[in-house]
Image (cartoon, rainbow, N blue to C red):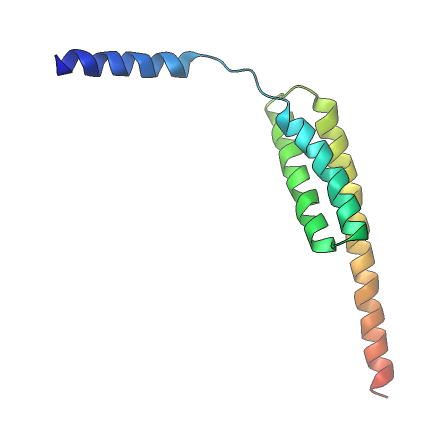
Length: 109
């Protein structure tokens, strides 16, 4: 009797694996929302949190595009916005570091 139960459990498990699940639009939507939220939070509140959101937006956008998720335009737009936000963040941080270096050199003279 236990042998039949094991075979039935294996058959049910293989049936579950054979079903095809359509990809969810959640990755695309998250990529777009996280890119906008990361840009706003990074600009107005806390830039490290913004960078984390922007990087996660790029990752989820790429995953959404590779998995052919619905709303691929949202994933593409999220990747584009995140790339621009990340470039601006790198630019601003490099300016701040350059100014700190100049200020240090002026104070040591």
